[in-house]
Every structure is written in structure tokens, then in C-alpha cells.
Amino acid sequence: MNDPHSTDPETTSSAAAETSERLEPSGWHPVNVGHLVMGVAFVGLVTVWGLLSSDTVDLVDAHWLLPLPWLAAGVVGLVATILRGVGRRPGKMSGWT
Image (cartoon, rainbow, N blue to C red; front, side, top):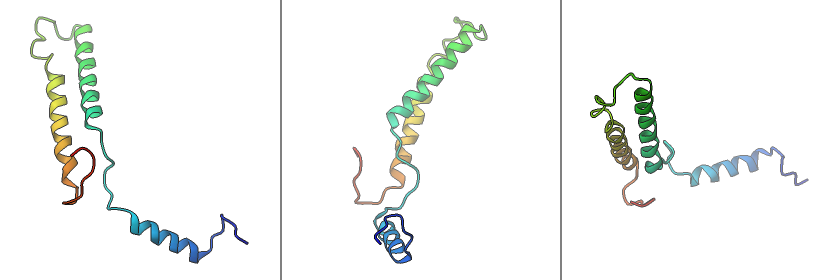
């Protein structure tokens, strides 16, 4: 009776114990910083386009508005990069850094 779907407490608990021993401490899932930065820039540029096309802001007055998506994307990228290294254990290399 080697049923793969059996709920034998001995095999279930030993398999769960082996799995929990191999798992590293978890937290947030890894974020691709490049995707995050480009997503923020895209949303910002669409917002600027929406403001300009709805005549909420005139193009003449938009000289201060156009760089904001790039600045926001840069700040988000820096924060994500800093927070990415906070939870790492010392001596454990992962990813590019």
C-alpha cells in the first residue's frame, strides 16, 4: 500500500521537518530593481501626459513637471537597492552583489 496520497503521520512529519530545515529565513520576495524603476517612470510619464493632454497643466508651465517621473524613479531605485541588502546574512552572496 504505497499510496502517494496517503496521510501517514510518520512520513508527513518527517518530510515537513526536512523541508523546514532546508528553508532559509524568508521575508519579502526578491524585487527586480530595474523593472520597479521603469514601472515607476512609466506611471509617472503617463501621469504627466494625462495632465498635459487634459489641459490641467500647460506645456509652457510643465518645465518643472517633466523631470519628476525620472526623479521619482531614481529615488525608488535607490531605496529598493538599499532595502534589498538589509535582510541579507553576512557572508552569503546572492544575485549580482
